[in-house]
Amino acid sequence: MQIDARHKPDYIFETSWEVCNKVGGIYTVLSTKANSLQKLYKDRIIFFGPDVLKKTENPWFTEDDQLYAAWRDFARINQNLEIRVGRWNVPGKPIVFLIKFDKFFEKKNNIYSEMWLDFGVDSMQAYGDYDESCMFAYASGVVMESFYRFHHLEASNVIAHFNEWQLGMGALYIKKYVPKIATVFTTHATGIGRSIAGNNMPLYNHLKSYNGDQMARQLNMVAKHSIEKRAAQSVDCFTTVSDITAQECAQFLQRQPDVVTPNGFEKGFIPKGLNYRRTRKKARETLLNVAEKLLGHFVHPDALLVGISGRYEYKNKGIDVFIDALNSLRSMQQLSKDVIAFIMIPAWIKGPRKDLQSVLFSEEKKNSKKKVGNDCLFTTHQLHDPDSDKIVNYLKYLGFCNAESDRVKVIFVPSYLNGFDGIFNKDYYDLLIGLDVSVFPSYYEPWGYTPHESVAFAIPTITTTLAGFGVWAKKHGDEVKGLDDGVQVIYRDDSNHKEVAEEIATTIYDFTLKSIDQVNVLKKIATELSDRADWAHFISHYQEAYRKALHNSFVRLSKPARYKAD
Image (cartoon, rainbow, N blue to C red; front, side, top):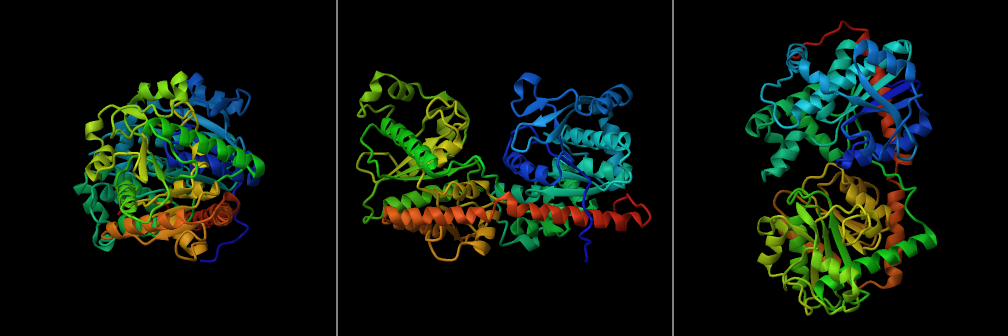
């Protein structure tokens, strides 16, 4: 299809549950992408988010009563719409509309009936966060229409971009009520794909045999799958974040994405030169100090620091494989260097361990021989239910005990690293920079910001072919075996768990043998790879999506309107 390069948006409305609402990885996508979009479409890119935090509790939003004041007052008085207007406190400072959507619950049944009659969206078996998400999505569509008509944008090229199933109803609302607006829908992970993987069912070897609708019924996901599928099939341009997720979309949603829009990274805040070396040194000192106090014995300053991080998705994030790799590594008799592995995975915690705090922050900190807890305790924070924690149980099952004679030691950090966790008191990035190697052996990872962030901080990383970033890196940078090019992408499928773990162990062992000069070369190569994966390069994919959306909307508008789903 020939797309006219002159198709450019005059306004872009982009909405997500995670605008000014830091919940997960989509927040990182949008908040880092915003700066590049602002440079291209200064204040014509407007983000829409849910107004779910009190004014005093939202550190990511600065209200501006003068911005679009006339429209906001009109919408409040004449349309009963509650909207706060301001700026998102991220690089680029884009305009944000925060929407109060509570009143839409009164119309919920009518809205669901409308969506069923017009598009075939089945909300009958909805549960959990479905209602809240869909009411916000519908409200977003209403607010977009209000802004569009108040400012007489009928002659302008307007894009409305909706992220994830949570915003699907907004896309369908715009399609029906403001058909001149070109719509884009992005799925960052298919609901069915994530659920299959999360339920320990083989996803990849049997992908072509799965039927999305059938699996939705089996997995009790009919409502969410229905809105995701109808949105994907109805918009002018459908996108996803990686080639591997595109395969899921084609199978489960029955539409091949028009554009793959990989997730970039905004690297402006990463320290450089002398500042980088100082920050890294402080991070290593912090990690080693906590390790030494927790373990209760001397830790060599040259110990190899290895880490994994992300959400507590035991299988999907490859946490199980990582622990098995550490088990294989410690069985290598030739290993002559201490390896300390940090599992930075937030879990359900009561708070920081008081005994560890006492050693770290009192006079006792001078005594590095003081050990806290019992001999086989791995955690820096107190878990609510340690006896049922998968990580702790598997470490104990494999016989890890963090004895002084053990070459491989494991420290489980189950707290969010936001600078106020009570033990490290640094944010995640200020600890990541102190690692030597990171490992992210994902089983289900549509993109994978963790390995992406790692190479951006010049930390060599290991990931898999089942992560979107891994697939991208395999194409653009992973040219030799091992970490000699800054990243290793290990082939993974449904049945080679053991082989992946052993390859990770071998790679880490090989890294322990490298000289400082060799490691510095690898860090430089890792940084160069990340330079090709920043928003300066990847924003062009979004521009392509906007052009296709506008083109397809022009084609659509030349045909009779049709809303009813097949």
